Length: 292
Length: 212
Image 1: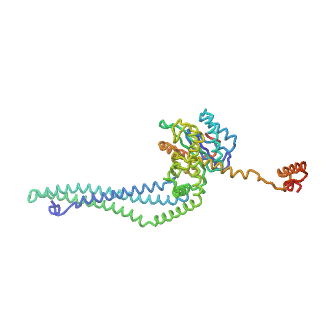
Image 2 (image 1 turned 30 degrees about the horizontal axis):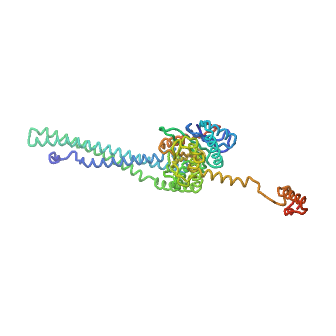
Image 3 (image 1 turned 120 degrees about the vertical axis):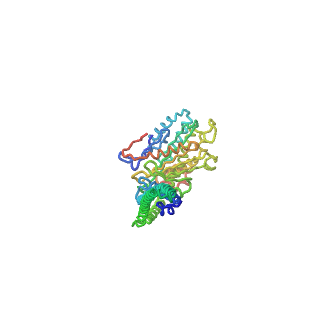
């Protein structure tokens, strides 16, 4: 029974099904906001990777974003609570109105029930006032939400622009760092891997592990080292190191004729002496002797 | 056991980076002074409890060869463990380098290093993480010993490596720690162990003089 036809007015007009759709939508928006804000807080919290001159401006901006989202989230939660309260109130009020409408309809045409009908209609009017108040509360919650959104929109802060600039600066700083430091970093990483591979050999050398063969199988030390990953690099490195060290450490071999007392002189002298003692002619080495 | 990595010249007041390492790891002696190094090598031989003279000699030679190999490189510490896990022998190595990052901005060093390691392509996963109070980069790689890698030409075991770069607070240096193991079935144990070691990094201003 339509209240407006029986009572002459509808004290609690509303479509509860539409409110269900609205509250579900608001709930999904809140859930998305909470998730995004949590992620921003996680990324931007102090002490993490952003804790430095390059990252700090980004962390600050992320925290500001997070605060704005938090304010919006609070307004939406208030709004959702208002919708829920309104929906429950509407159900209650419409049930009461339906009961009044039924009673008024039952007593229609009965002069003796006039006083009761008047009381019922007065109650219906009170329900109407209650309904209007609840509607005003709901509208207030939406106004607050609208205000929160407007505050974000009207804010002088250009958070997106600032964040964009800070991220560009960070990217440039990272690229600059990579250009200067990456080659050495990669050399270090590779060296660590190589040394790790070489150190792994020790476990097999001492017989604690037997990689790639049966435990107890007799394998010579040389074989173990040779079959271990990277071992040839140790051998090569040692050889290379020796080649690098050897020429610098050893004196240059020379047969210079200008050096008196050198091994060449001594050999030449001895040769001359032996030649003189034998044939009486200077030998071929005589021209490189110490006297010249 | 503690690894002490000296920043700058050795002196009582020089800052030292300290890493807490489980006692199962035996550090390969890398001291520059021959006498000290030899003594440390003997200590390792004793710790290993080797009675076979051939094994002792082989290990001794190998330790010395490693020390020579590393004396001018960036790697300042290497250690190995040989333990029993789940009834099987298991081994891993831990290598540590002190790397100049060119900045005291730990965030920049971490982001730069992560990007550089990603671009390099040899790592299957590179991540930025927070380890305790430290921002850090972790990089995972698997290195199969392909034919030609081993001197015998034989295909060896696959080594899985996890490297962690942890910038040192207040310094333009980072500790780079790599754990490598051929025992892939024990990987979760070793991974968590390495992350724990990285978390333990702290700077000490009084020289601990061979903290063990």
